[in-house]
Each structure stands twice: as structure tokens, then as C-alpha cells.
Image (cartoon, rainbow, N blue to C red; front, top):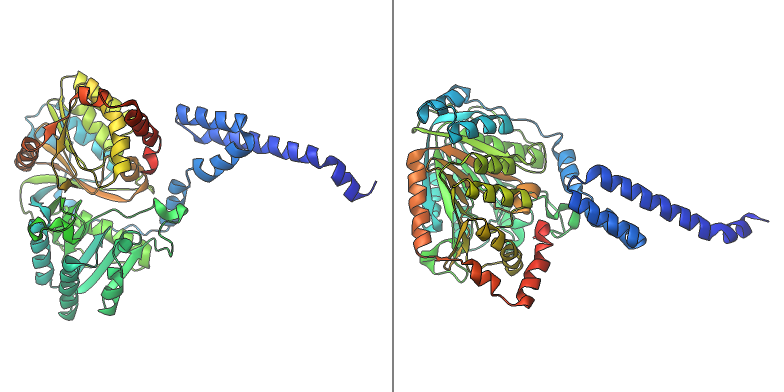
Length: 486
């Protein structure tokens, strides 16, 4: 019997053997890598009962290549030093702020945040909230126009529209004055308008780069690795951060076709160095250029009494920091928790943490937009709201225009602000930047803003969700299955 005859007679057995080993290898990988038992059980069931389909689907969609790829990309990222060590304070200072009680929830929260972030809290900061682009954009443009040495600008979306043109002109004029300008835009976010603003910025001679540049922005392996941070730093001294992109819809006075409410924050003081460092690390990774020296990192004097810490989060070395910090805040809250977010798809652990906090007597209020800009996200979100309402949380739906604000206030004293939403994409897959603040004055002003929004909102009743038709409930539950990808 020659080789071809042998192969012809044995190929069914070889294929069966190969299939068996493929199933076995896949099962071992699932058991070893999947920490969520429900996800592991689901994949194992699919692999064993539909072997060929299950194996193919698992290796295509079930393997977490996002974190691994991010770790590979950022392994060579040069760490940028933080020069403002003199402003660092420790848990003992927070303890003194709140009356010396070691059991105070905020003291415990600061201790946990120290271990999670390994970044110091900094004293001497002033944080000013700016409502919508109507307040934020003029202040940002004025800061750009006053720049003398350096400008760092990072945005997820930087549209090529009327307001994008104003920023582009201000940046071009700054460069003509001799200011060193660096602009970093996410490669997917840059394509929200056409032609992308990066084309014009480069024609103006500006140093503009795209984060994780890809010809096809929808390409699967890079789609989730987005830089969602919004950072502007002027001369290393004045910073802006929050959730606001650069696009004309944010200026409500202009009566845009697609209006968006949002919050941005002007930050002054030592914590600005952390905004600068976060930008510099992303810039070094994207371009290979290292930003260093006095023009980028000047000495920063105290500008106020706020204690703050910058928190970079993403699927690299900073993986899961922000999500863990939110869970720590939920666990230590003693009186109240106020949350506003445009996209609300918390995982099971966050939902459980909120329900436990409510059972402890903590008053929890969540503000969500009544009219979404992403309908599938809205449907998936609705599927999980009944559990929170039954657990004692209160949910308010804000009136249009769509509210893109992102904020968390705990016990009238602690604020978490920045770019992250309450969904898997922000807390697991994207690169985000947030700031935590221990500042009762700022917390009071933020609660005033939230109260004004709440007064114009309507409270969602459990009966409203339960009375929805079976078709709507099934639709919402179906899209809930895809919440990690929405």
C-alpha cells in the first residue's frame, strides 16, 4: 500500500483525532484563562456540543487578545517621571481633613486608592467645572492663545467642523509664536468627520499624530484599543480634562443639529503634572518622541486647597485600576452616591456593589439620558435597571439634549471626574484618564449641578420597566448579552 492509498484510508481517523485534540486544547485554554465561571461554562458547552463551530467561535471571539496586545504595545513605553513629589500627601492628611477618624469611609478609600494606583495624592489644586462647550471651549481657546512654551492636546474626537477650525487656527497661531505644539487624536475618533482634522493640522505644520493608526478603523484587533482620554495642558501649568470632545454639537448656544450636554474641568496646581505625564506616555508610544525638561514639566505652585490624584486606566499595565477604584468607593460610601453617565452597562460585580451599598442605607442616585445617541446601548442598559431599582437605587432620566457628562460624587466630599463611562468598553478596553478629588467645596458645586439636572429629569419607576411588552423585554435582554462589545 503506497502513501496515497494509506492517506485515503486513514484520513477520517486523522481528522477525528485532530478535532479531538483541538477540542481538548480549547477546553484547557477556557478552564485556564476564563475566570468568570459563567463565561467558562458557556464556552465549554458550545465547544463540546457544537465542536467545530464552538472551537472556531472561541478562538475568533472568546480569547482576550485586547489586554495581551496592549501589554505588548506598551511594554516598551518609556515611563515619564512625575516631578511634583513635594506636593504629595498621605492617608494621615486625609484623616486630618475629615476629623481624624480612621474609620471614616473616605480615609479608607484614600488608603485603598494609594495601593491601587501607586500614585501620590497631591495638595494645592483648584478644579473649576465648565458646563458644555459654551463655557469650556472659550476657556480652552484662551489658554491656547496665552501659551508661551508648550501645548499638549489629546482628544478622542476632534471634528473638522466650525469649532474644530477655531481650535486648529489657535494651535497654528501658537506654533507661529514659537510654542511647541503636540496634538494626539485617536485614529478611529479622527474619522468621525471627513476629511479628518489631522490632514489640516499637518498642512499647517503642526506636530499631529494618530493613536493606534489603522487604515481600516473597524478592524477587529484594534477596534477596542482606543484612546478615549481628553487632555489639554498649557505650558505644563494649566490643564483641562473631562469627557468633552472637540465638536460643534457641544455648544448649545449655536443650536447645533445634534446638541450634546457635557462637563469639562479646568485644573490648576500640582496634579496638572499627572495630566502631562499621561499625555507624554501616549505621545512617546505613538511617535517615539520623549517629552522632557522644564517647558513640559515646570515647578507647580499651590493654586487651591483641593487634594487630587490623576488616574490613567487602560488594558495595559494600568488594567482595571479605575473599575477597582469605583468598587472601593461603593464599598466605603457611608451617606450618598451620585452618578451621572451617558452609557451605563455595569458588570455583575458593580451591580452587586451598588445593591450592597443601598442595603447599608447609602442613598444612591443615578442620572442617565432619556434619549440615547446609541439605541442598542440604551436597550442593553434598560435590561439591567430593574435589578438596581429593586435593590433600592434611584434612577433619573435626564431630558434632551443628550447628556454626555461623566461624574461620581460620594459622601458630599469625594469626586471622580474624567473620560470613563460606566461600561466594559471604558473600564476594560479603552485608555482613559480620570481624576479623583477630596474637596468638599468642589463636591458641593458638583452636587448643585447634578441637582439642577435631576430637577429637570423624571424618576424611572420599577413598574414602568415591568410593564413593557414581552417583545421589548426580550429585545433588551438580547442586546444585554452583547454589553461587553457595545
